[in-house]
Length: 213
Length: 222
Image 1: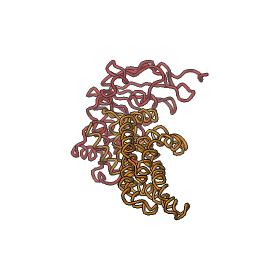
Image 2: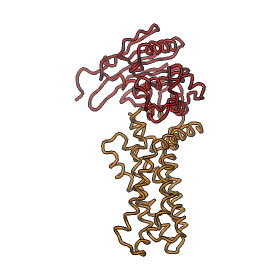
Image 3: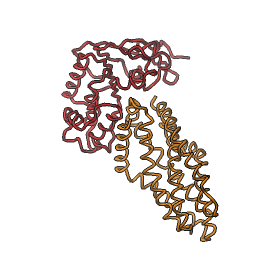
């Protein structure tokens, strides 16, 4: 179980949220909602351990993340709003190198299957430089398929730049993963319907009333 | 752990090969600057011979600075860095792989080209292998120290200048012993101590720099 306990996040001299406490249950999709600038991305980065909270802590299976970095990194999959795709490498090379470093499956067959599933079978050896923005997002999302077994998915705007069919396919994949008992936390500005158990977390509700002195 | 190192090495080598103009830039800078000194100083063989080790070493140091700002910059911008930091293996493994490839494409070509340019300085052929050897032994330390600077100045405005100011003072010992070894050989005295100290500096850098680098990178993605 992933828990956020009394998290406070300060950006510059502004408190984004204070005392944010939430339990992210397995088998539930948590949608982090709110307008731009309330700290959705900041919250996701705190949850996956890329940033440290100014106060409070994030716990996974009851243990603070900092005390179990390796185990946590084996459990979590993070999809940031930056694609982590290098323009000079092909989709195959991009996936293989990053998957190997992250301890995800990275044999040629698995990677080719993931790329084929996202409709990139023909582009798999082209440099990413020549692909469209949507295709680049797909390369990044192919890592989601490689991370199929990870119990926690943290996804920052996974639907950006995808066409309607791809959005639907990705939503089905996320639902299936949630039904299998994974913990999924995501942000999105698109109206995507999920038929699984959903929860909404609004970091804006934990914002202090007025600016910090 | 080996798989992470190998995967990163492969990735960085592919990237170095595809972006090879960057490599040529640092090497060309080295060649051009080393060639400039004889024009400025004039053709007095004795004088040129005495300044040669210092000139080659200082230029190698400056050339190694040229490519450093790009070491982690691209990875930060496209989000690769945050994904790499989520690796279940220790981050020093992939940092070392990156630094090793960076040295291979910036330090090694400079070390191999230095003896070819020594003709301009009328250096005796006997000391040329030593000149290349000291560069091969000393440039990994320069790259490792530089990597800390590159990680610390990541995402900072005018980071390249700050990087130079941070790294150059730290590189002074390497400069002293690297150039000193060649000068000792020219003067006919033993240079073993210089080489031993260069090597020791290298080992210390390999042991400490990657950890400092990782700490700085974690701060950079915050």
